[in-house]
Length: 389
Image (cartoon, rainbow, N blue to C red; front, side, top):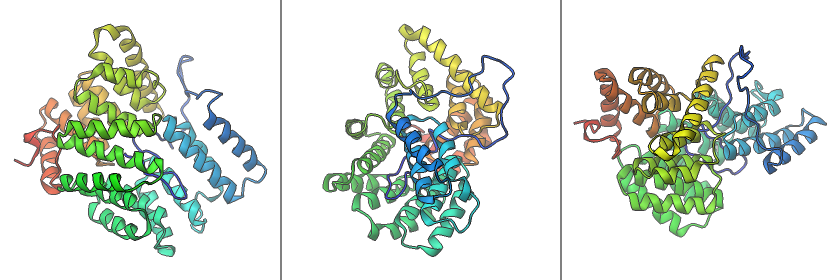
């Protein structure tokens, strides 16, 4: 899921981060990797630790707790390390079940729940906040994002419309483009987004968000030149954004530019979603056979560990691994179906369609065709068979 910028909080990615809330996992093998820690010299980790020390002086100070949560969510976004989201949740634990928590705490709480794929829980918090603060721009933007991820497009459009008078034109346009681009009006969304990017000079994080979405829309429309321009432009602003790197890597994989994927992601092996894309590229390059084997086995072990601790947050990535690396179409389809039941972004539809075709499953193909016909969704990668014809 595309990251959205913040006014009072940071909206964390669903696609690239999120710790499990399941029961504790006790390994049976001494070689099992429990956690991949960031570098001790990581500035985000240093600042987060400083704020955590301050919070420890008064763990029930909601302002200090919110600063820790914001910093942890930012670190999760930048690194793809799910451990940071667990730290964000820990900071807010005194208010985790408090219906009367301050509005900024509710927003952060919803952000974390969204990242844990607890979409109903995130929406409950946002609904509660917007009942008392109907003009809260951050809450409107966050709710529009969650509604879009879950395929509730009419409601998402209403929130984007309510948001428009309260924010910069680029934020409002990007909010609406995220919805209209998957509901039959992708060309118009792309034009409006291009115009807004040309005339608005918002903060860097807003422009990266907008340019990344513009690149994704252009790629779905088959406009490779525009997609390349937007992705490269976004990377020039922020070369560390994990979601952006994943979106650009997918575009490069579609273009069979495997060496470019390796160059982009060779140092991103800590992030499971980015490691998947690196493995997909290395598979196609004989000169990378040794690293492919090592990275493939590492990623397989990570997926196995996630299953052992009942972590279902990376079903989409695991489905893609099962299909494109293991060649197990039936398992890939089962994973893709389970993922589709929770979230309905373009990447979710794409893996469902690919697995359905590979498995020769007519029922799953019908699910895809009916969704495309209902939403008037367009994606050059899906092919004519998926356009409701």
